[in-house]
Length: 183
Image (cartoon, rainbow, N blue to C red; front, side, top):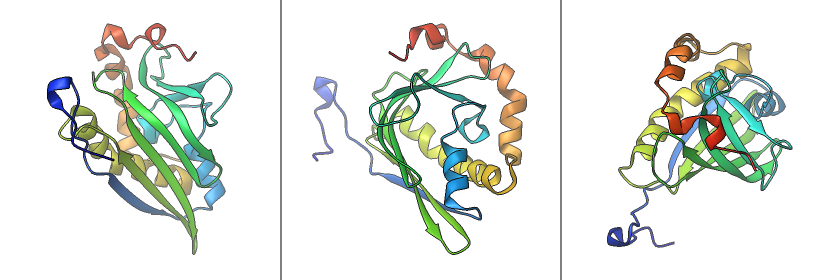
């Protein structure tokens, strides 16, 4: 793939893949079920709730909504869904006017637990989305780890939960859920 694209034509240079690995002291099935839950607020995804029309599966559209269920924070399409090993999707933040990137979550059984790998690809080099995603990798990993190991988020995930109502008030009008249908 040619990573340098013509900026004059509204195209970009893509950043190299960014990879974060974390060891989680929990069985792979527990980590997987925590990662792909669609029925509750997920502290490791900044308190958002994953919504789909017919569940997570390859080709399905999804959106991550604020706990108030009025704001779509992220939208995407599932590219790969191979329980309990791999979940990949496009990722577009509704507050950033940039094309989506690709996010892949990989799980591998290791002695006494699971290796969790979070990979970000195809984001614009130096773009806001890339910066947000790279900055969020350790937050996501540490809070998924805490949830899978203890059933509770890390301190940072608890703080996001406390601040969530403020984040909801700061959302832009174009982030309202009616602007981001699943179909």
